[in-house]
Image (cartoon, rainbow, N blue to C red; front, side, top):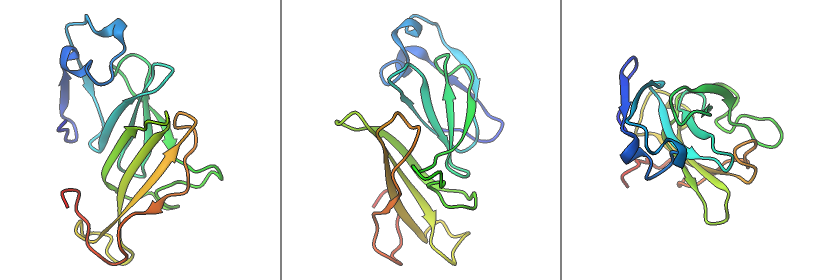
Length: 154
């Protein structure tokens, strides 16, 4: 999915339904939706909502109408209420959501290494999980070697 600020994204329900659109919307002819520039996802939650992530601050977005509209649900936070992307909202890179075989949700994201806030090649990759349908997340674990460049294609 390619999205840039202000761009209207047309989602074709037939193709989109293969991944996450509830069956009740599968017969829809399609619709247009505005999404944030840093939109990643969506992932279908067990209650039928869609979950997406805005890369700025690693903030949650949810939709109860199959993606027609999106509501901000705040920054993804661990069980202690601490944002998983750090206390200061910053741009994250290569955010991915996945439904795990256990039924939980995994989130992978990359943040600038300390001292390299503007270089996309100086990133550390982190992983966090949720076992309560994205209400709370585990404390992120760095999954790359310290001070080594990361890239989502490596």
